[in-house]
Picture 1 (cartoon, rainbow, N blue to C red):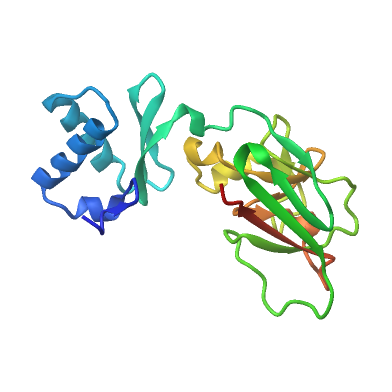
Picture 2: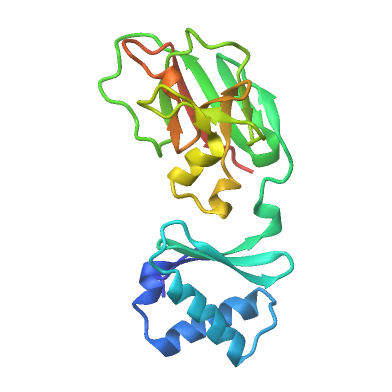
Length: 218
């Protein structure tokens, strides 16, 4: 069971290795512990949904009640509460040499001026740190949630695309899209955090800044 759960999240691949009776037992417990109405038919419906989407990269959602869904993809199966969605727009002007906190999400961006030699390696798209060249970027920068009209120039490309298309290309589910935070200059997205940077801040020689993202302790 320890292999199947990561706190309250079910690891889909491990779940799929279980016997049918144990799968049903876990689904029953999941519904019961979260106070959802259920019967034998409901358990079978939820189990069928998980099995049908266990190999999906993007994942799908299954309605549990008016405000809750079950999300399943090839990595995780978890209950989504309506409050998980970034329905409220949040924005903060970025301090270009220090920390900026987006209080609504306990999220922090820390920017420091780069000094010294050029980095020998660069972080991957899904990491919490980037090196950037902000020398030709219009300030101020903002740390915020998504808004209508956002665009990004994908890394290695020359032309901007809608952020919505960019997130779709990343195979993000609606659930995952709702949690995306951004660094932007106006409606030009410079970093979709943990997803990728815009080509317009690509470092060609020496970065001007190092940018780090993390969640502050509650």
